[in-house]
Image (cartoon, rainbow, N blue to C red; front, side, top):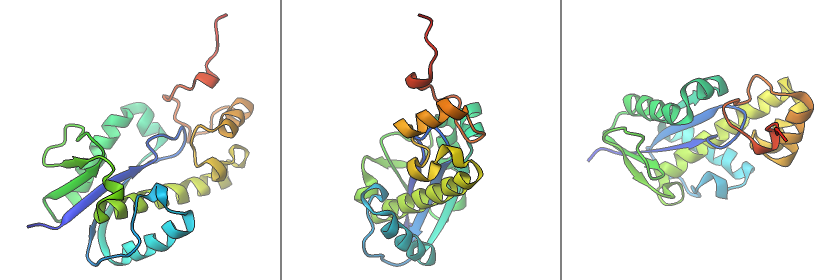
Length: 183
């Protein structure tokens, strides 16, 4: 049987920054893998280095402009296809409950906390996403991306209200706090 390629994403929910997807086939067992959201940033960074040294992997990114133009579901489907085309296996497991219409793909809810390959993909995607948004924070310091990683926190919404949108904001994501009222 072909080795398992775990697939996960990071950055589906933020209102700024890239959507990052990763596929991962582990060549060697790695201790401490888990859902990236359940690990500290320091632990994720340490595991990231171990994963890239002990795995085959493929990472795909979609910019805010691509998400706005194509929609998040289309980007997810496209990312799944790109990962599946670039990994040497026919056995794929994606974290979640939908295949986005992609054939020969299995899904499992909370696989990122149950299956090592999906945990590894989760860590690759999250660390890549967070590193990228911290770099963007240097270009756009007024938004304090390093603090909220692009998620729609109170601070982030206040920064948008003060400074408007940056080029890495997803304009297609509608925020009630930013909508103009007619009354």
